Length: 303
Ligand SMILES: [Zn+2]
Ligand SMILES: [Zn+2]
Image 1 (tube, rainbow, N blue to C red):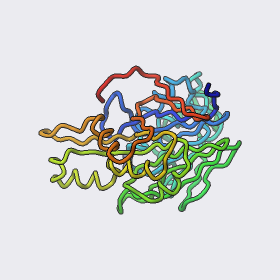
Image 2 (image 1 turned 45 degrees about the vertical axis):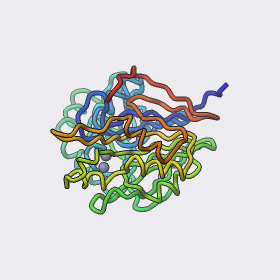
Image 3 (image 1 turned 90 degrees about the vertical axis):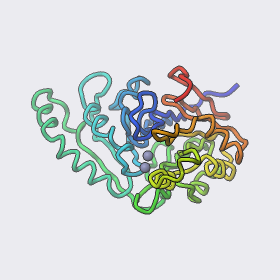
Image 4 (image 1 turned 60 degrees about the vertical axis):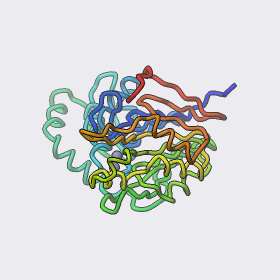
């Protein structure tokens, strides 16, 4: 029998910029002990948290991987809605954001953009000033960025392309176990270095059919990400208890249909034969002696 564990990773959004209803923007919930951390806040983060019954104000810190908008467009919603006085929100302490250089500018400008709303709600709803304040910490190199209540989060630089810097992944350590989130990256040795010995390795993936690869824009997108075969190489070298795909980029065009999930798995399997799961929104992974996978949403087949 698997002992239940208080270390759990839940994929809130497994998508990309495509506005699909079944794959929301990138966001991953980390629960360890009584702490709840979020990694990225893409489109729909608040909806997924609400589906889980997690009050928006319960998030202890938001960690950002990089500044592509699909990873950050849910921030104002989480920050502002999380401040409301209703049961699903109620943040009464500052909104804590940890990210590579750029986090401060993002939050400072959001404070300016939403100044009218903040002023209105303070006067009208008497919401606590503390709850809308922001507390931002920036980092600029690999290292520990969060260390509280037995949870240690280590940021590590990844390679999302020469023009897309900074870009980081995260390793979360708790109770002798580790989960690693690749962030957006092409095949990168740092993911293997920090992914070594991980129980759970959550990795991005991108695929396009060979006939699409002649297109310059497709080449550019694929060059920013990790192909299924490359992901297989990462998994083969890190040997996690479970490898999981998220941020699933399936490129297509008007003429050429996008790759299917099964094809991604098939290509990965040419390189890697260990445990592998294709992530879905609200799929959770309880990390104990073994890893227990749960789904909150029913399977809907092709996505
Ligand atoms: Zn990106
Ligand atoms: Zn992305």
